[in-house]
Length: 268
Image (cartoon, rainbow, N blue to C red; front, side):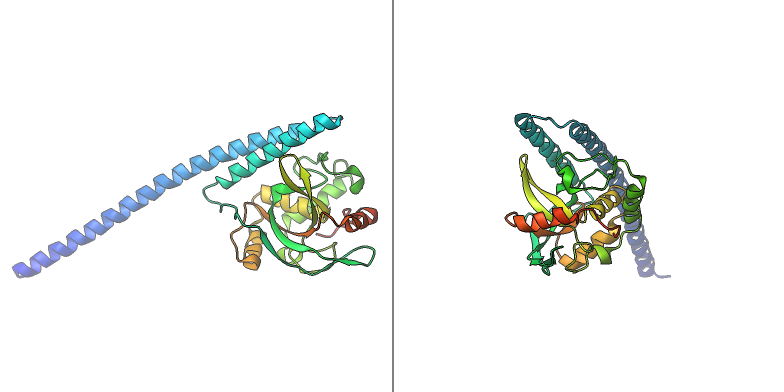
């Protein structure tokens, strides 16, 4: 072996050792970053649990007087905003888009047979108001009691239906472009509660609770992936596709309530 060959071999060995050292350093750095990330996620999860516990306690004791109820609604809205802020800080999740995600949707067939225009919209699940909390089955006092006849707080059969939806989410059904309120995305109407807008679920109450329960258990990835493919946009944390009625369409709202569409027929 000549001196040149020897120098070439040494140079190759040095480069190989240097590359191996860089890979080892990168692996160690990633391990440290993963540990730091896990610590951040754990802290955020604890904070979120604390805020949800505070909100649950607050919702259990709604005041009776209008003046106190206004203060109570503002406190509930503030807690929900804090929960959403914690979600947005999650390092593995996307930040919510600042622009609303809206797109055309087929007209909705009302129980009376009439059709009404709706808008497809993506919202955070935390902004929807359902009749009950699917994690505790307690009634949400912000939801008009007369709009939901199903006693999710007392009836194990109804609770089981929601649990089945959560355990076997069907994105093809939850995102179906159907005119019926008994299938497809939930039907909602925007209301002014507290310091920010919220959306009352008029149709698809059980489906929404099932999706919320699945999201709480980390089982909504398939739904979220299908929604991402549909919208091709950055999504908020724990997103849901809804069909939004105009707040001025009182006739449509009355039609839903009188027909009891919010009391679903057991479908997902």
